[in-house]
Structures are given as structure tokens and as C-alpha cells.
Image (cartoon, rainbow, N blue to C red; front, side):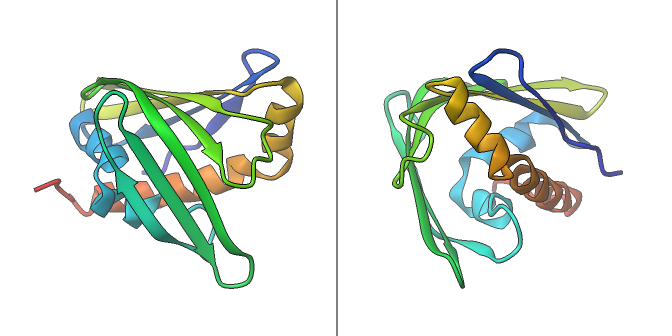
Length: 162
């Protein structure tokens, strides 16, 4: 069963995205933190693929993602992990190479599990309301929804981290 992505704006600088996955949160957490799994779903809309996917999963460790589109070229992002509570919370910063969001954003992923289903809530705190609104206007929610649909397919395969 595919669940729908809910997108809200809980404050003038935040976007919150909530989605249910039919999988245990340990596995969903692995899909967010293990490069071999990330590369299979966190690619956004069709036409994009990972060129670089590096993860140093420790507090203070960095991640570096570079996506490539056949027509649009590369889009890179770097972040630093601020808090890791496996398998329920992942807090980090993020900033795009071409900084269209006016500075670093703070991202918090919360995973809760009930009856074998995991609810994922990602909250992004931007530097300004203008940056938040810009993210909404470029279609971020569509890209996230496409990625989450891929994550659903990956989880349905019974993928494991091992």
C-alpha cells in the first residue's frame, strides 16, 4: 500500500513532511543512512541519479550528495550530522553548493513505529520565510514524494542492510 506524503508549514521558516512506510523503523533508518541504500531511492524526480553519496554517520560527521541530471547537470549538497539516535532521530544541517536557500538549513528526521509501520516526519528549518517559500515553489515536495515512492519499493523488496 502506498501512503501519501503530507506537507505542512508549521512556522514561517519550516516545512514538515510526514509519510508512513510499511516497514520497521530500523530498516527505514538504515535506508536513510547507508549509502548503498540511499542511492536506490533518494534521487528525487525522474531523470536524476546519484553521482556522489558519501556518509560519515557520527555526530560531527559529514555527508556529501551530488545528483546528476542528463540535461541539468550536477546539484550538490553537504551536511553535518548534529544528533543521531538510532533508529528514531537523525538531525543534521544541509547546504546546497548553489545556495538558493540563503544559508544552512537544519533538518530533523523523526521515525516512530507502530504495528510494523513507520511514520517518518522530516522537518526542515530554513534561514528565512523567503527560503522556505522558495523551496516550496521549486517543487521540493514533488521530488520528495517521488523519492519516498522509490523508498516504498525498496522496502517492499525486503531489502536489508546486511
